[in-house]
Length: 347
Image (tube, rainbow, N blue to C red; front, side):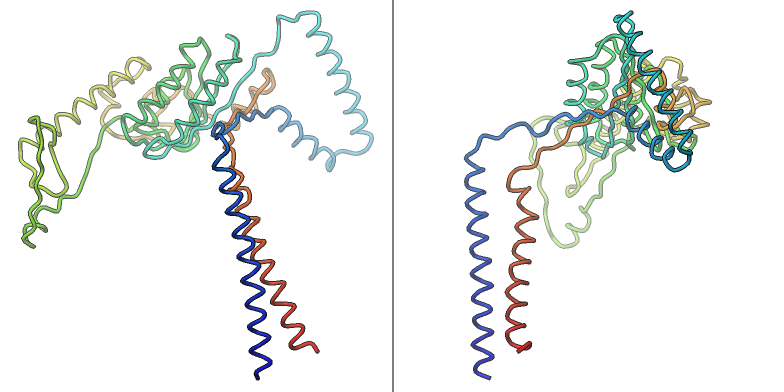
């Protein structure tokens, strides 16, 4: 029995020693990385969607076509490549247009705007007047100022003289539609949700609960309407009226923005805060055509070079090592445990 506890104690000591050694190593890496100047948050990554689709086709052809059909196809592709190369040399100014595809997946804070602004800046550095930008947009809306900034980022594309197309596969409502209406053309899936040109604000009020428990909540302000409504104080009719007035003014600005960017829309009919599925949105001129982003990109690749542009976040050295360190600790402890079990029970 004494031998068992001695061996078990030795096992714990070995395991602790390994864990401490790894922790000290990581601490050294963290200290070193903290002294290293930080670089950019990410780097722009660009991928050819033409090559992606061609790769998918080739994978299927390898399975579906006979050897003779594959040989014939290879000859045709080789001939086509030569003809395209010859055409480019004879008329260098007649290059295929380029299409840059960006993705925006918005939350209530429009957090993706930080990535969007970098991607747009990168595209504008290389884009020509014949190029087009396609934004696959998904958002149910959120904070007015955040989506106002996101819409302004898309406006930069228009200001640079580039064509802008927005594709909505699922939802572009409220702030999401504020962004979409910037586009020269809006495409939507048949059951995508669009519209919701309205403004909403809601908050709970705990004043009666606090009063019931003899808790006072005081707010001190300078300025008549510095604080209109509050979660904990008593909301006055004057404060609520002012808050509603501010919401109405925001709605007016929203309607003016949509009307300016999409004058074909009858604002009296669509600025009710309602949202509609794709077909109904088309009837109200909120979109220009019913089509998924996949269908659009598959079609446009035939006449243009299509590129997916995205900002890829750079992981710090510590983040890269994080998973490896965790696996290393677990692996080391498992190794020591296995050795101890073998020495104890496999004699």
